[in-house]
Image (cartoon, each protein chain N blue to C red):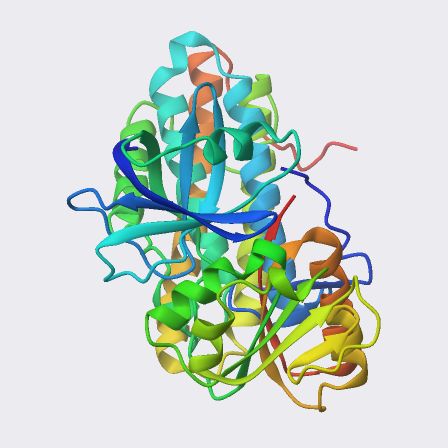
Length: 216
Length: 192
């Protein structure tokens, strides 16, 4: 598989625990929204989904800074002018239009593929973004612009007054608030969330389809 | 990457095209049997000696084909995912037929049923052939249920592939015995 080398053009903080890294787009590199890069960091590899649109002049990735994390610490130390090597695009977590209503369900940086989809012109979706704190609802403005609904599901706070926020996990919202029906569920996040939502789909939303991207 | 996600713990699984279905679904049974066949071929390949490089290459080719075929079985027709599936190699059946002709030209004519067995590699080829027949039967069962004529045409090609593959594996088993210096053991109707 071809290895690309790209120059870091910017690093932008999104919250106290996440940042966006922008890379110059190598000539000839194309991808579809929802696909990811495989960064080659010394002897290890790390996968990051692009948040940029497929026509954007630069590539962007969303990185959660894990305290003491091997990969994220190295990426956090990147400055404009540095270089990164990667392969790609990888993955088949793609938007698939259908008569059913699309529901984007994610936790934390699992929002990344949906940002790319929104930037590529996908519209009419509902987003359930799980986070511990409202500051971690990155890219909310971009997603809201094309959404029929956006709900930030905040698990680390008490009662929330702000419109568009739900106090609890994404699974809590699906159990308590999501109207009956058949949806296209797009799930991106940790295995526990993906598993719990799939069980809810099996129990309560017959005729739905489920597409998953799990990270660990 | 963790292997277990526990999402299948309640007897349901997800297709490539997103539907949640029972693990007892005909389609799941079909692609599961293709996976079983591929695994038996892996054992066959592992049992081959270094002198069987051509056979090993052929088995690897079939194993790759079976991944594509499994993906076709695991995807509902009339979905965007179905449209994006990698094509089945249109030359695959012709290749198997050529290999069958090549191997048969060196084999004595078949005059009746033979007992599956002989050299271990040949015995694995016979087992693969029997599993392939089961994959074909299960494939036929769900293809007959399809509503989309276009999808049925495409998947019928998969059935043709499996049918020819079982012939290839039968002749391969005989050829592996020949290469090992073993003769076919005929079934004697009077045996008891």
